[in-house]
Length: 313
Image (cartoon, rainbow, N blue to C red; front, side, top):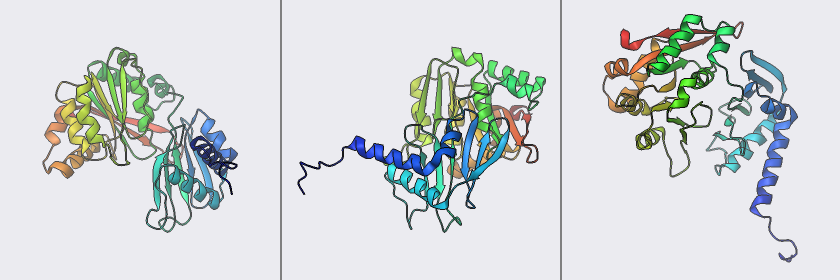
């Protein structure tokens, strides 16, 4: 066959076909959920159940997704990222093309049937006043958070998976005080939004050559930040973050998985110990001014906030 009659598809055409295939596999129900500003997460479970999590109202089952469609979504995204999945690679983590939502997918046998979650960057920003209105926090707690921001105290937002840590961090970053500062935000995927006009958003990169959160923290100081914000602390970057916060860059925010406001200190200490072998609890208590813990009630999906002050204990 003459190639001049049927020339090879351009890169743009290949990408368009790829996106069309992905859109078809996701289907209209997921597409509508992703377009809903109140939806923060879409979850396809191994039993075929399709769920969404909405800001302020919690999880709800939307319907079902065929396992073959779920597998197609996972494989298409793996191919898009240049990391085809198969027997030796049963999980895929990355972002959706164009829109940038965070994606995590897994394939059998580590799960019964193909399953994935899509985490959206929220478009509707909850404010501290919203938390006050829905009784997640008290007036005294809202005032304590605002005072901590004004006094440039480092704030650690803690909670379990799906508790709303990022949503609360966004509410804090929406406070007017941040508009006057130069803020550097470090994340794995874009989820945080900030009122500051003078800001820099840096992302890690998994593909070779990789750029880790520790790498970002080391280069951050060269950007002359007033405040340093870390999307999620989950490894050795905890030590670099503490050093940055404790050397002339106060007023930062970070999130961490923990079981209580008090436990957040221990969790950060464990992360530091994993890379340094030293007990950093004294440094942590001298650096972190406030820990906020969000607890989610399973029965009502309502959230409850508690506050602790590590530097006063």
